[in-house]
Image (cartoon, rainbow, N blue to C red):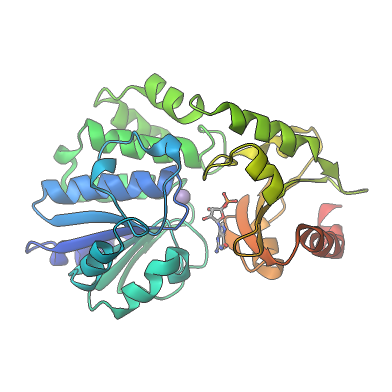
Amino acid sequence: MINKFIKEFKQILATPQKIVLIPHFNPDGDAMGSSIALQIFLRKLGHDSVVTVPNDCPEVLLWMPGMENVLNYYHNGIEVIHRIINADMIVALDLNSLERMEKLAPVVQQSKAKIAMIDHHHDPENFADLMYSSPKESSTCEMIYKLIEALNIELIDQDIATCLYTGILTDTGSFAYSSTSATTHFIVHQLLKTNINVGEIHQKIYNQHSLGRVQLLGKALSTLQRVQDLPVVYIYLTQKDLNEFGYKKGDTNGFVNYGLTIADVELSVFFIEDAKSKKIKISFRSKNYFSTQQFASNHFSGGGHFHASGGQYKGSMKEAIKHFMKCIKHVSSEFS
Ligand code: 5GP
Ligand code: MN
């Protein structure tokens, strides 16, 4: 897949291009890291490239090099639409369906630009003209490294390496998930040769939280329930809880993982209310054998990876949890 993609990508890059890079909405470290790294790299190759994000980035990522050139649809809507409509190429990053671009999806559909997709999620939809899809990779950042390696590895600099390292670090749970491979560590080895400061990156991502965020974690953990007779736990936060602790986007990232630290738990679930859209957003994480991707797509109009997926439920928190309990009992044989 990568060889075919590289051939087609190279052909497009043979002449200067206007390129727009789009990560998924509610972007995370991998989405931003891969997009900004590619933005910097394409600029170095002489192209006019810009990242446009469908909505705000979490505050803990705002320090990333190249972030100053990122355009946010919510703040620069007209410019973002103009850029997308007039692009020669659009690159979708860390997403497997157009829908994950949220409000930018219909704009992209109106553009005559060629669409490229670079992503590591399962079951990619067929919306792109050229596709580099590799669900085995730890992160989209790992894929961007391989792409840069094939195009011109000499152009890797500290800024690109910092972005790629950030995405790999966050998407592998600090090199803990089983998606972490020998290649992942080899790539990190190469990135570290640019003298990036891994201690500083770690501090900026993990030790920069507000008091409210840590108190919100306390609130979330106080709701922890175990589903009777199953290795399944869940936590939840209502809109009222979020308001009480001054919630900001990204504050609850990682909360769902705490459930998995319990010895015999296989599945941890986190429900979070969004009163504005009248939806409950749900995160699923599993330790070993349970496919969160299948569960999220079958029951909560979502998807993701085997061990980490998300979905949503239209309705109240109570209804969402009730629906979840029904669905989890339905698949209880998978836990025996
Ligand atoms: P999170 O729980 O952190 O929001 O998401 C975990 C993983 O599932 C991420 O890789 C994310 O891309 C994916 N994901 C989250 N929500 C959705 C969704 O609604 N649909 C799909 N297809 N994937 C999702
Ligand atoms: Mn990712």
